[in-house]
Every structure is written in C-alpha cells, then in structure tokens.
Image (tube, rainbow, N blue to C red):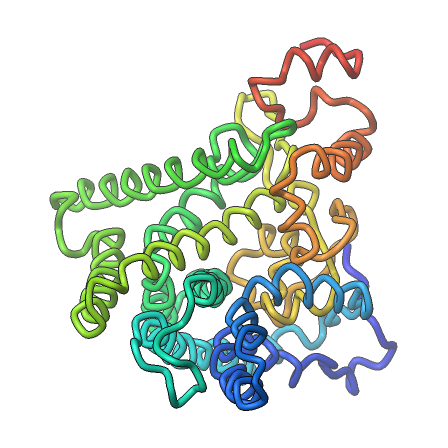
Amino acid sequence: MTTSTGPDVTVWRDKKRHLWLLGLIAPTALLLILPIVWAMDQAGWRSASQVLFWIGPILIYLLLPALDLRFGSDGQNPPDEVMERLENDRYYRYCTYIYIPFQYLSVVLGAYLFTASDLSWLGFEGSLSWPAKIGLALSTGTLGGVGINTAHEMGHKKETLERWLSKITLAQTCYGHFYIEHNRGHHVRVATPEDPASARFGETFWEFFPRSVIGSLRSAWNLEAQRLRRLNKSPWHPSNDVLNAWLMSVALWGVLIAVFGPALIPFVVIQAVYGFSLLESVNYLEHYGLLRQKTANGRYERCTPQHSWNSDHIVTNLFLYHLQRHSDHHANPTRRYQTLRSMDGAPNLPSGYASLIGLTYLPPLWRRVMDHRVLAHYDGDVTRANIHPRVRDRVLARYGAVA
C-alpha cells in the first residue's frame, strides 16, 4: 500500500519538479570547478587548487552524505490520480536526456586535462601533478558511475530512442552489457542466490565485486546468445546488443586515444573501473541479504517491495532519479522515476546511498550497521535470508538456526 500526501489531488504538485535539474551537477562538476581552480592559482594557492580535481569523490563521500543528513527524507508520494499525467510529462525525460551532452563534454575535457603538457592558461606550469590526475580520473569516473544510473532509467523504457541513449551513456564506463543483464537478468533473478548482482548475508563487498562484474558479464552474453540463436543468428551477429554496446566504448575511447595519445590509457582504465565500481557498490547495498522464498512448486515467489532495501533521503534521490525508491522500481520496472513511491512494507536503509557507499568498503562496519536489520526484517529467522555459502554454517550456529 502507498500513501498519498495532500487531501486535494487537483492541486497536487511535484515539489521536486525543478530540483531534478540538480542531477546535472555530476556531469558539469569539472566545468564548474575550472574558474575556481584558476582563481586559486592566481591567488598563489596552486597546491590547494589541485584538490578540486577530486570533486567527484568529494561529492560522493562527503557532500551528499552531509546534505542527506541535513535535509532527511522526502515524505511525498504522488497520489494515484496524478500518476498518468505525471508519467506522460515529457519534462522529466528531458532532465535525463540532457545529462548525456554534458557527460561527453566533461569526458573530453577530462581527457584533455589529463594529457595536456601546458596548462598555463589555468595557472599551472606544465601539466597536472599525478595526484591531481588521479583525482581527475576518479571525478570523471564519478560522472560515469552516475551516468550508469541515468542509463538505467532510460534502458527500462520501451522507446527505441531511450534504449539507444542508454547504451550511449554506458559507453564511457565500458559497461554496455549492463543494458542487457540488468533488464533481462537481474530483474528476473533478483534476491536469489542465482543473481550475481544480489549480495548475500555475510558476503563482503570485496567478494561481491568480482562475482557481480564477472557474473553479470557472463549472464549478459548468454542472454543475447540465446536470443540470437532463437532467431537462427550467430552470437557474433552485429545485432548482438552486448557487442554493439561494447563497440560504442571502443569507438569512443579509440577516437580519444587517437586525439590525445597513449598517455590517456591510464585515465581510461581508472575512470571506467571506478565508475562501474560505484554501480556495484549500489548493487551490493540494494538487496543485501534479502531472499525470495520458494513456493510449493519449487519456483521463487514473485518479487515484492520486501525484496529491496529502500531509502527516501531526498538529496541523493535527486541525484539518482529516485533509484533509492528501489522497492517500487522492482515492483514496477517500466515506471518512470518521477512516479516511483516509497512503499509500505519495504525494508529501509538507515540513510541514503551516498552515505552507505563508503561503508560498503569496510566489512566490519557494514555488517554492524546492516546485519541486525536483515535479521529484524526476517523476525530473527536467519534461514529466510540469502546467506553467503562461505559463512553459512557459522551464521546458522551463531543465530541458533538449523539448515
């Protein structure tokens, strides 16, 4: 059940309507900091100015968590009566479309700054220092990681344009196979041991990360190969959506390496790995320990809001297009972000995604925060959780359960 706010739906309005444009901060951050870097250099603060090239990690690990803490939860759900009108309002999809030109402008800018040997116009003698270059690559990876979420929003839609824009957005992080695996793999197997993108109780992020990356890639390829075989085509046919998505990455980075030289290669690797690591840390926290139970016929029960961790913290939701209303998303995968709701019965995270991403890197702290929430969600019956095989016997013994 959902709860609408406001008794008179004829005057209901989306209080976040214009705030969705804050999602453009990630792809424009590099553009916005350059005048500040220049001013700091003119003032003689050259070393301090290079810290600003770490704007991406600063945004993810410091600014967004602080803003989530300051502004808290949203609390507004659209009532049923406005859902169709809200769904068809094209303004909201334009807010995601406009992410892409700024994304690619910043990628080209980042490539230039990373390889430039003369940045005197910016106040530097010669090139950036390596600490600044690493920060620049991570910041570019941040906009790529947030871009994966933008691609996620568009990739769920039925319109051909949005599906292609999804793959274009994924090209930066070389993660085009996500377009296939997420829609046709993850949404089918979510909250089961068979899903590489659903984290298990007791599994650390560092165990989950390679399992999800490799498993998702393998699954995407197999899904496309099966589809093409049904059409009597080779898996290597150009219509393979995994192949043509990867070819977009090859074309993008091939052109940029040709323009800026082999010195760009470390930048390509760092930004891509960091970008998709942000996606995987979000994957890790979205379904940690949650399990769909099997029915009498041996099949998994239907996915419900109880199989995804939810968060209604407004600031991170603005940056991630309501991704944190994940329970509604899995219940209604094609629903556009502006109509997603916080749903009763969904398990809730203690804070927004941005606050928890850094915590996923620290297994003891993560388990201290989350394990008791998983147990509470299952009324203390740990056998109902998706337990990591490595720790299963220890977990069952600790909580007095039997397999």
